[in-house]
Image (cartoon, rainbow, N blue to C red; front, side):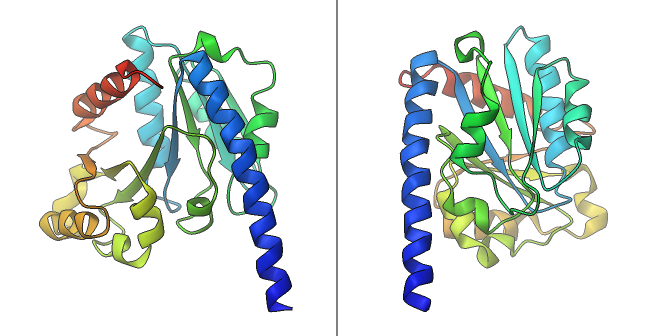
Length: 222
């Protein structure tokens, strides 16, 4: 039984990787920078993305978002207030997005008309780590309310991430957040990773984050 479960999982991941490779080719051909945002529930991922979309649009960038949740379209409606095209993906109990879901929900969108496509994954630090969505950049988010040891508890996510974002930095002091320890733990798992300390409420750290996005967008091969 255990052997069959392992084989089934390998088969599922192989199919996903093949679909993701196709997506990656589509993204590169269209010249759109795709980011996959992953965090636990309550990290402030939606607030962070909402501010990101709003500020990018204000700068003239063409942006869109796919939003993954088990149920409801609450986050999609919230993000749509930014003026960006947004589509909700309801997984109905599945704890992650996969490449097939992304492919189906891109139908009808002209990727060449976008500069950035953000994928807000389902709130989970485990399952999304195993599923490639064809993204150029995987972003691991950690809030100051979650504790500094999250990277050590969930090393697969942070080790597979290209950038890390610490959210809600405006309430770090009352939460007793140990910034130095958090940075140490992140770098222990993923040495040299780009880390952004942000607040969607005050705007702290957003300028640096947006500059990073522009730099990555400007690189060849996106």
